[in-house]
Length: 202
Ligand SMILES: Cc1cc2nc3c(=O)[nH]c(=O)nc-3n(C[C@H](O)[C@H](O)[C@H](O)COP(=O)(O)O)c2cc1C
Image (cartoon, rainbow, N blue to C red; front, side, top):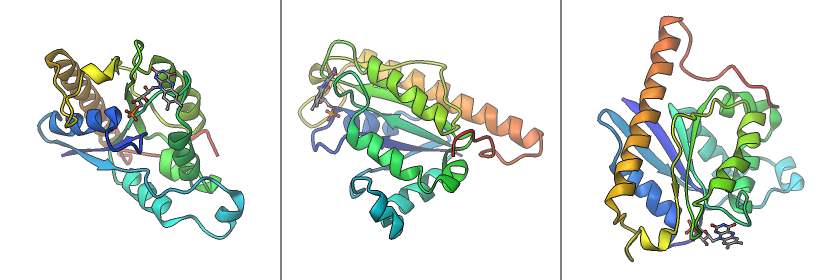
């Protein structure tokens, strides 16, 4: 069973990105699961807070990442870049720096996103790349999915209502899970653990 952890970068109740993540959970290939995690409860990063200990919400999310085969970030776009609340969560997850390798090193990330605008998070997804690189992840670049003009793509209950996007999402997930499986098979042939140990960040 391939286990993916999905994280939406929006706290909004009616979030398109959270709706996209729920649709992804429904459309996962056979023998693969998508568990939905949340950034809710993660405080604003403050080095003084860190000095008193890593907040429980951060530790819990770290442990969920560590037990997953892959991590799917579903990102909004704010001012043509990464939303601060989502980046803040990833920044917390990268603390202390000695934990970066364990949490992110060689971990197989993928990006998706939905926005109200015409370009569907293309700039936000690009803005994540230096972050994922710095943390030593192994991003999957086999497909891209940017859900543009999201107000017309989801109904009021947050259900995906466009068959074309649903098909594209299904294909995206199939490609990503196949990548995770190839990586796991390669690691087991080489007698290595499936994940970790390749971090450049710290
Ligand atoms: C501060 C802010 C900046 C935004 N900047 C962009 C932008 O650069 N491009 C875009 O397509 N949408 C932008 N939007 C609109 C978002 O796409 C829209 O709010 C979307 O619903 C956010 O994702 P969510 O539904 O998952 O919360 C912005 C929204 C906010 C609040």
